[in-house]
Length: 229
Image (cartoon, rainbow, N blue to C red; front, side, top):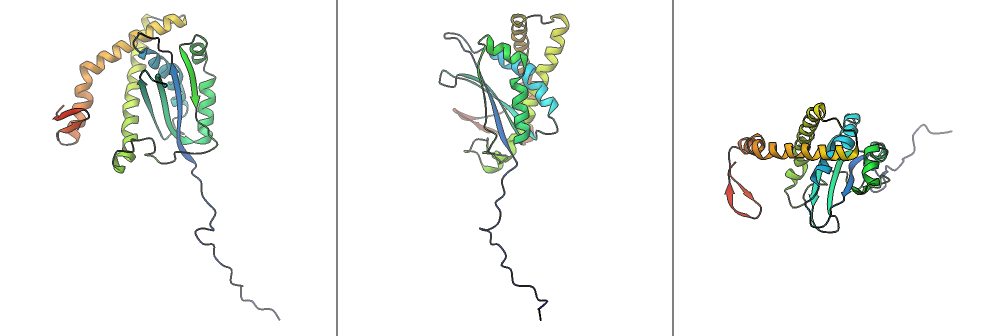
């Protein structure tokens, strides 16, 4: 005779359960830009890379990149002048982005001419930064860490869209025919962006953020006073 009763099968404990691994995370592309001694950073090279290299990448991967932003810096240290693209996606999308950037002919010209010193990519075999707030400042409150990436993506998108608009108008009268002409053009384009930032973004950005938070004064780092905008 055999019994119809099912044998007792132990259920796996939490420690025995199959571990899950994150499928998405933050990835970086770091463009190190040549910065001659006794000169100011060539900020317009950032603009050229953003428009010629990064803009088509973001446009072609719009549905696959959840968050993205720019980070720009220049200091006389080991890192030097560097433009970074940070984006949140799967490793598969990151691999495709890296391949497209490496194949960009304009970037290859910049590397050949020594204008860009190096381009560094993350290792996509492991998702090291899976949390939305993992690239935010760890000194911030966790609520700010997790919400700031959405804010800075909007700001980065505005910066890039302004660049795209100015470049489109500029090229109508000044078409690029060589790398030197292109870089000179982006210097003029970047000067126009700086002018708009100085003349209009105090109201367009800072004032409207100030209003969004109910006109409450804020502390500004290294300034021992509350400021209004």
